[in-house]
Length: 495
Image 1 (cartoon, rainbow, N blue to C red):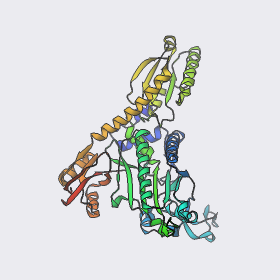
Image 2 (tube, helix red, strand yellow):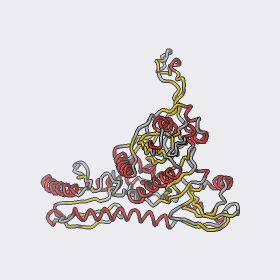
Image 3 (cartoon, rainbow, N blue to C red):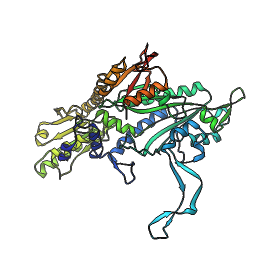
Image 4 (cartoon, one colour):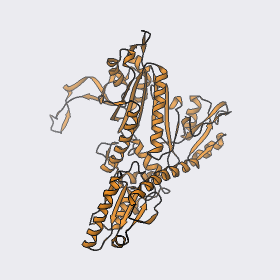
């Protein structure tokens, strides 16, 4: 393990390689036999489970219920919403047959030509079409509304360039789909859920995010409005961490989902959808990790406290471990997740390196001398600081320490973002500044043509039109065209 840690590429040398190595070496995920798909390993999945559990509670606190909808979607469903099919057509995996057979020529297994489906099926890239076809059976009157459903599922989008967690052909996510009697209710739901995502990112992931509207060119396929939370990663690029969409009546009209309103008239239902995915894992790694490995916020760490015994004899080992398990019991009683690393085939230094690599927030080390003195060495992962603390009252102090680490990780990410946000007013300055990374606050004339030209020439996109953090409603001129503009937007290169 010590050798593996030494071999971890430094961020300053090759940030992309650092990320790829860290995902594998920290036992988060690995490539699968299917190109572009990943195996999420137990340690990585434990982090995702903590994300899932806390988000699920936040959703349910707003009245959302969980459901499940099929993985396979009739191809004809996608064609009912023109913008939707155009947005996903190039990423769809299609099922054409339902049976295999032995090759008559003895060359293994082949598709049975007699088992062709009457209608081809799409492996879901997202579930709006399947769900709105179902909602038609559920909704008849205003009394049936609102419907607030979420599902935890997998989706397939056939990406050509993949990277573990950030962009894979198959990934895990949640997708909320709600139905409302009025546009105002649907708009409020869209806003409520993007605020849930922002609160989760900031308070649980320790990730400062900007909330804003996507430009028309960056909206979800089939949406009237898309809101987003945008994070800045340590290499200065942006990462879209979650989105919430106001779908208007587009899908209700496509699937003829009508209801009798309070006035006794027929109307189409108003809709939202919203989602986050295992891409959040990538954001967590890239926003907080350092050259020693992961740095996990205590709120998401599968193991919050790890304890490493130091000893020379079996007698010392037993005495130290007895005390450690006593401390473990006290810490667990306070709600902490604790691991005693009692493996006897690894030296303490190897264990220290491994747990640093895995980002465990607090490490406790104890030997015979500590036992005699009633003390323990406490190391915090975020700063790598070590102090000696008395064992008495340790469980209470750990509560404060974990809280301080959570805040410290957020503040460090916030300060990094603040140092990498710049106002830019000229095209020449834009081209120079975008090479340095970070968020550029610029005026934009609101046209798709200008947005496309800027992306074509610099690979920068409009990340959002911010509604918090950097609200810049002021008169100015577009950084590219020189036409009038009323507000600055955030440009950045992104993942």
